[in-house]
Length: 107
Image 1 (cartoon, rainbow, N blue to C red):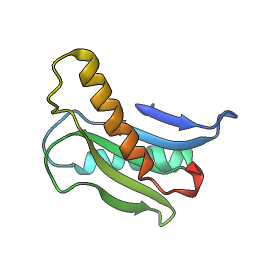
Image 2: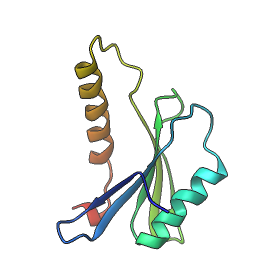
Image 3: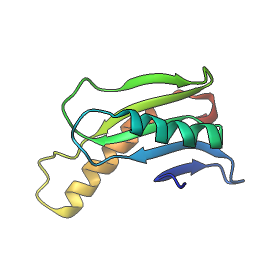
C-alpha cells in the first residue's frame, strides 16, 4: 500500500498524506477507506484530491476522532493555452489547498 503523495519533515516524519483521484463522479466509500488506511498507518492527516468537478468545495471529517480527512478539488479546467500555463495553474491550486490546512503538524 503506497499513497500518491506523502508530505514529510526532513527527518522523515509524515505530516500529510494525499490520494489523487482522477474521476469526476462522487466520492466513493472505497476512496474514504483507502485514505483512512493511509491516515491510520501513518498517523497523520490526509486529503483526497479530485479534479475540479464544480461541486460544493471542501469536505471535512475525522478518522478515529484524531486525524482530519479532507476532500478537495484542484483546478484542472483552466483557460491555459500552453502546457506551462496549465502546470502553473494546477500548482497554484494545490498551493491554495495546502495553505488552507490548519493542522498543528503542518505549522
